[in-house]
Amino acid sequence: MNKVRLGLTSLMVSPLCMGTLTVGPTQKNLPLREAADLMIRAYELGINFFDSAEIYGTYPILGLALQTYPEMIVTGKSYAVTAEEMRCSIEKARKELNRDYIDIFCLHEVENSAALKGHRGALEYLYEARQRGIIRAVGISTHTVAGVRAGANEPGIDVIHPLINRAGIGIKDGTVEEMIAAIQTAREFGKGIYAMKVLGGGHLYREAVESVRFIRQLGIVDSMAIGMQSEAEIRFNRMLVEGETPPPELMEEVAGTPRALRIEDWCCGCGRCVERCGFDALRLENGVVTVDRDRCMMCGYCARVCPEFCLKIV
Image (tube, rainbow, N blue to C red):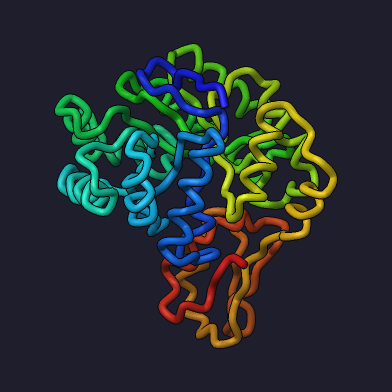
């Protein structure tokens, strides 16, 4: 794949970024070696950009893959609030990646300027780490228009990872048009943009061709992160991002594996997952959790807080 410059950074990335959440413990939970081999195969197919986060539990997978291709470009993320919390997050990532530096490190789920202000200690530590060469670029991820605007107006932010798809699924505070306008502004301010949830967390998987084409034609997104669990999915999405039409047999293979949140019958109804869900997709009914599948973005974040391990994306 041809590489593009990510905003004003020095990073040259593939226009398709491999999201690693879907192979991790809250979703497919591939064995370490198998998951690392999938990352290696993605790199060999032209993808040099890999998205991860502390909550995903996939740093060790990438650490193993980096032993084969140390030039892979990796993003880490953290919910850290203070400088000390961010220091610990970065050191955890460096240890598990077995790497002295991280290409991009983001504040995770920054939803507005107040949230950015509340994480000022962590953000200042990121700036310091960038100056010391521990990280190469500072970013934020966000599900909101307000978050993109906050990132655009913060001079030290290099990269924004916003939620955008043709149907507006998962945008928490506005329309598709408003999100596009905010991304356009951020782009004009020199921010690198790599999109998330371009397939609406899986809801648009049968409209993948149109959905990826929509993002490509915006002309304001450097790369798009898509979670992939197999070589077939990697080949399929690579062709889409390059403007090609996948053959019918490949389309059928990929379309035949939809995902959904499974709630096991031993749910104790503690409600921690309901509190964690950022999309209001979970609720308690008669002492157990139920899911609104139209709202669920299949991120699997709820599974990380379940004390009984009864939630999983399958």
